[in-house]
Length: 362
Image 1 (cartoon, rainbow, N blue to C red):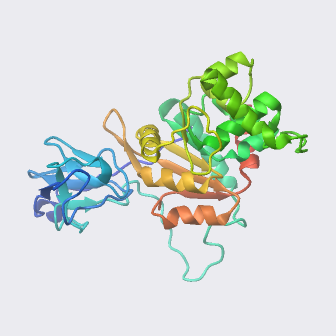
Image 2: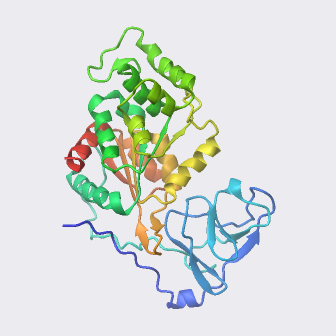
């Protein structure tokens, strides 16, 4: 049975509340990077704005940003990117009172009547995730050809031989369209390829090597000697790993820097806002996002990811967002920060990626 996306149902603009709604009020930005008083802040859901009598969908959205009308369409912009005089939608109601409508149930997700009292309604380490895996297999097979799959990764994958190999096979088989991570993921993956260790431990036996605490620094230093990751891979005859396969199969990867980084590697963004822009550029057309074992990168990506995407043919489709972590805290923190459509899977990410790869690349 082939995978089918949920159909999107747009609002019925023939209803009285839409016909009787006033136009949204547009106010100019008083200064660079400053929104007018009473600005409307965006959510993760599809939002429509009545401009000159017509309801316009913000086609490319982001939580905690503002809606800017450019004379033709609604653009959603971060506060820091606002220009003086740009027209921003104002109003803080969501049901047409001010020409603004937030549409949270457009994908008609199944809703079952629940008992007032019932056990195991949350998602925790006790949850059975078998159905989630089955749905994820079918989703990834679908989006391999019909979408964009973005992976957000912590360094845990580089510490295990099988997990590193499993993700490499996903890249080779076309299930990875972009990777977002920090300096550590790339550093320890390259260390594994170069010295067969991650943070000085053998990636298969997990045994610490003599002077192994130098290994990640030696790896960074050697990459910087060559100047680029690509030249390092060629110069040292590297033929394995996550970064190697990203380079080989032209999969873009964004490495966002941190105050605690060693080195860092040459591709790492040291400016946080340049990193944010690069990450959002990958998220703009993402249809499936899978975040694994990296709480801060997961929350950052969640803040950039709406629940929907307007496709090139004009159709609106759901964006699937998964958070995979062994800590329930990380999964719950994401929804606490507004990513209400995110789905949590509480498990060891190394086991998760091996299971996924076995099914998808067999």
